[in-house]
Image 1 (tube, rainbow, N blue to C red):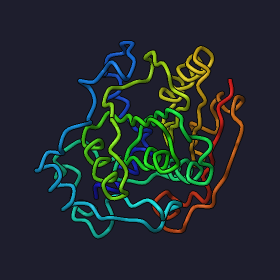
Image 2: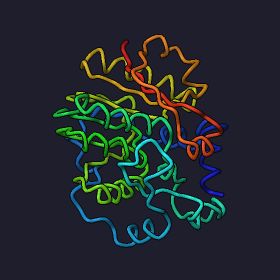
Image 3: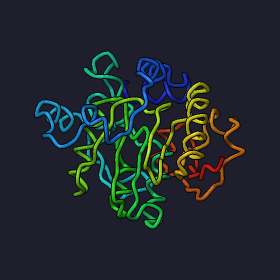
Length: 264
């Protein structure tokens, strides 16, 4: 089953497929506003992609921490939940799962709009786009999402439509290790799923926050590569949430998720 295969890859195998994809990306320095050719924004969604996503996802706004946000996700009612992974015509649909770290971040931004109000936000590893949408709903002046899967960018456009928010730019380049300027806040959820990626994120975030003074918020339910990493010494927990039963069942019994302020 595709959904369970994706979940197993991240929870057990450490996201090898995503790591390989990240390594294939160039590590060039760029400002997101200078990479317009890499953005999914300002153009209609391909009709075939729209039809495929609408046919093979279900609109959900329950069983998670943010009932205010409607999302197109893979659920047990979808054909590809039960089909073999090889039948899915695109890259593994990690974006179609509302991961608990992202749920916590989105909930935190909805409950604390001052954190993003009139500020520029980068949502790293955005997936379904829920955190970016929460930032838009809470009054952010600029929001850009980043996900290396272009299908995720298409799904985010549909999710923006569902929630009556203006579509935000989506960068499909790997930004980890690049030089970024001008962000008030970077948010990232569920990104510490492997040791190599955790190390890369830590080094990049530390350099970026010290040089640019950007605030960083991290959402994670307590994955092993997060709770045992040295980054823990530089984190301050700002909120913790009990996960709904449906989310617990989909994430091997994880009962809570937390939002952390990174302060190197």
